[in-house]
Length: 258
Image 1: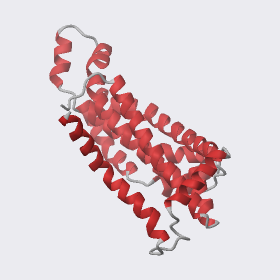
Image 2: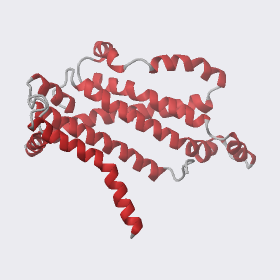
Image 3: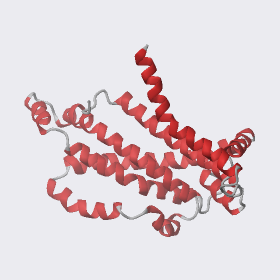
Image 4: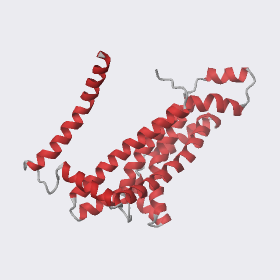
């Protein structure tokens, strides 16, 4: 019983900061300490959130955003993980070292700064937005995959070879399981980058999406709707992170961390 109360107390302490933040959000604007026109009370934001959910527009915009993010992230995984596996293990060390500086430079280029280039090549449609999300996501996936492969203990590989395992078996039974925890860390990081870049991409040339709601609300000074979309974005970000963690715990049956 004592242990249960300790867990409840610990959970209460974890949530106390959030409760205080919401309390201040509700009453500071109402007391006139900040301009309610710019920061509306939490109750008005939640009321507008309910309004968006009731007329179905919230789900339409959320689905549009998730579709763009999902396509960009999946494309980054399909390219970044195999390429990272190749550069981390299959490619010669000399070739990997020669390519590494170029990849680091490309990875430092902000995707949104390339938006005019993406528009030039892909137009102003959906593909340009997906290309921006892909660019911002593929680098953390690629670099962590390379790191994960390189961190696999060579002793495991030598042991597998000593019992006659072929290269495919070593890859499936040793390299991939050993690198998987690090790869999933990169995918979570990539998903965060994708979601942040999605919001920026949807504010340019989009007709639907949570980013579009934020831009449209700012232009028309509908601040409750803007903050309502921001709350949905925060919740979706957490949900996606926990979903990837769930996949990791389901797929990876071991983790080097205690």
